[in-house]
Amino acid sequence: MSEQKSTTLRTITGRVRSAKADKTITVNVERRVPHPLYGKFIRRSTRVRAHDEENACKEGDLVTVEECRPISRSKTWRLQEILERASD
Image 1 (cartoon, rainbow, N blue to C red):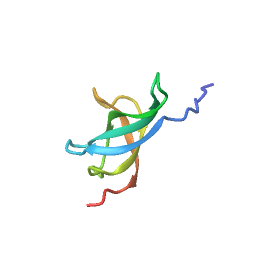
Image 2: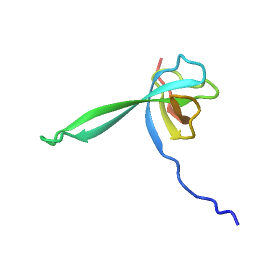
Image 3: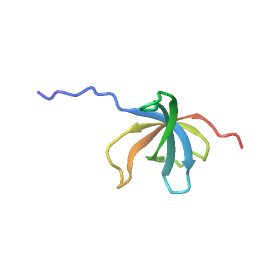
Image 4: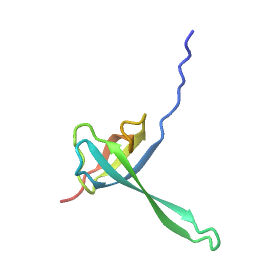
């Protein structure tokens, strides 16, 4: 008997910062966290590299990426969908 795990993959939303590499996009993910002492919400950002199989993204697109197995040394995310195209 083999049991299948039904785990949901982590997904995050961010803006494409760079789409210059082949089949790779760099996504800037912003989050708001409270300051440890003063409590004011400040913006923190993280850059993740994601796999874009069709080279469909351009800089400025709003995308959703999902966690996956390591594709390369720096890529552990995969493009799920493009939510909004960048206005050129």
